[in-house]
Length: 624
Image (cartoon, rainbow, N blue to C red; front, side, top):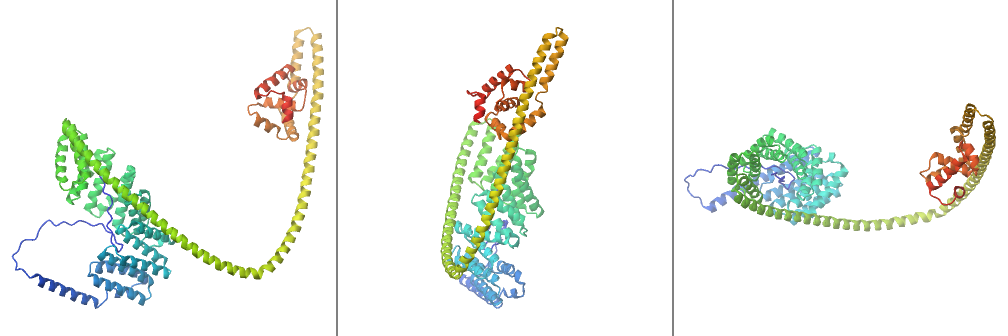
């Protein structure tokens, strides 16, 4: 069981963790003579009137004149908090009005805005949410705009947003808080005195409305800025831990809880020590690290009972009971169940009842009493159903708040957009008239300059066009020369191949004659070797590279197109197709590649089947 952060707001912007102080003794009864009520009232009113007269003789804010301008607002708010917040309302309002008069006297506009905010705060304290506070907060914002004080404008928006939020007026609360956020973001949070507090508060609002990601973002930003408020550091880290738990990120949750535990232990805050101990113990319990969980849960239970945090104490006790039942120690578990039965008398919320019924059901299951176990399982389910209903209602309320807030902000944006459009139209009309006056004076000169520029541009373009035509013509002639040279070289290369083929055929004929004339096997083998030597040197790899480069110059893109159309062909297939492209005969190709005519024919058939075409390879290559 984790305690959700409880934000105790004050209208002046001061937030604190309130410690509960309980009176454990009653005053002793004494004998006394009764005093008439009218006499008591008369004496009290007289004392109050005298006190007010004494106080009004010297204004509480008079000392501000001796304070540095940068420190006046903080000093004034401290005076208000200590001397006026709980004072008689008429006296407090009179003193705040004196502060506003003083700020005008010393020409401190920021202090004047702060004074109106304090007055709005005090009316909210005595009247709750009211039209006077609304108008006073709005006046502080308007004055900050009038005096061009962006920092003060952000602060006044922030205070108005907090005021609306305190009375659950969520749409306007978000409106003014988001305005403050935009202003502070432009100024830079490092230049905002209460930036950490503002970001913490904005995170708290998002947390309470269920937007955990935004809440975590603002909490983390608040912790990254300096602050003197220990309570804020504790609450922010604790809430970040709760958010991590809701996302089941137990290591991160444990890190935040341990950080809070270190802070509250150092300050000897036993209330928060109890809360954190129970939370850390519950994390260890959830991750089944029972050995570490027990001491934290015991400490949490003891301190939560001490400070009457009954819900947290019941949650801690529930975890302890489950641990001892898991360890088969029913005796201690039963003792703790009896202790929890006493605590239930102090807190019988559905969550606490659900915990109590669950441990009872588990205990009776463990001890073999299935009937009682079933009874308490049913009771626990009823409690869980009630919790779910309450949760659903809360979620529905949060959704309604978000919808109303988003609609309100959207309406404001539409109004602002329409206002901006009207201003834009008006300004645009003025600008157009002004420009028409200027254009009417400059139009003749502009046209003359334009004609001159157009003439110069025409001459330049004409010269450039002539130059580009000459360059293109030179490029074309050079390309044609290159193509003619390459074609001539390829033709010469092909003719050489044909001549070489003729020589090879002559060599073959001579070899056949020699083979027929030589009867001995040894001489025949020498001639075979000689024939192989001739065939192997017909087209080497180096010759092929030279041939390929020359071929590509004449038939550009031939090899690329082959690979694109027939990606599965090999290098040998490519060589054969290029020779076919040159329209060489089968014999010429056979001699050139050093293979037989039969092999060439078979290679053609295989290749035709491989690339899956019906027409002849020669026709296919001509069409490419």
